[in-house]
Amino acid sequence: MTEERRTIVRVVGVTKRFTMGKVEVRALKGVDLEIFAGEYISIMGPSGSGKSTLFNMIGGLDKPTEGKVFIDEVDISQLDAYELAWLRNRKIGYIFQTFNLIPVMSALENVTLPMTFAGMNADDAQDKGIELLKLVGLGERFQHKPLELSGGQQQRVAVARSLANDPAIVLADEPTGNLDLTTGEEIIELLRMLSQDRGVTIISATHDYKMLNVSDRVVWVRDGVVDRIERREELKITVGGIGGKDNGRAEATVHGGERG
Picture 1 (tube, rainbow, N blue to C red):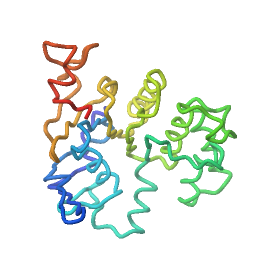
Picture 2 (picture 1 turned 135 degrees about the vertical axis):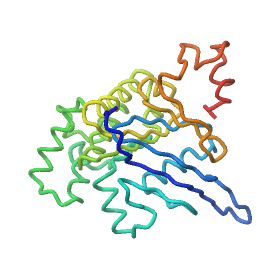
Picture 3 (picture 1 turned 180 degrees about the vertical axis):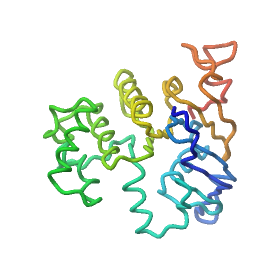
Picture 4 (picture 1 turned 120 degrees about the vertical axis):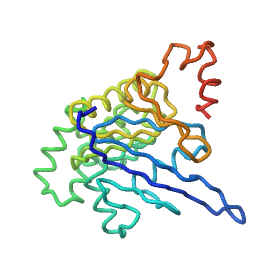
């Protein structure tokens, strides 16, 4: 994590309510959170905790019912559709569990697409795209289409694409969810490298406990609120789980079943 403690994301009193028929669901119940530039943050919690909703608020993929979300002190909940699209394209990179690559496009074309939207000329975009694919270990596969790549390789393309416009923040939504153990660890290490070497702020919504080893802080979400925030050195990480005397049941007892 960088020494400078500049706040890059600030969530203030955010609530989110959804109406499902005649039922109102309160997904977030007043969340306050501050994230510093260059941090690696993991947002963890059981299914239905509000983890994904909070993630979507930070990424500008949804707007709060109440409260504010600031990216570099810009209140993104007040931006119009054009302004929000501009900010997302240039300030934030996205990595999704299902990769979200365009199947008819090559790896290189997938990576350069955000650059095209940002107005970069084709030659510069191609050169930069090849460099990014080399960075993630796919320098020889840039002409391959997604179906010609393994799941891990597709996720590496997605990582390269997330860096297309030199974002300050990369949002990773369950980035290892569809990967085997070894490949998942490779993607986690790649994200750690981006945070440490490039100063990119990584914010991951995840169930993957392997993320804890590389996270600067872990934000535990439960019942629509931030239950607690722990620094990596405060976590008791063991082979059997996390913390507690009964390591074999730690994940289920100490954190109340965050796997959800």
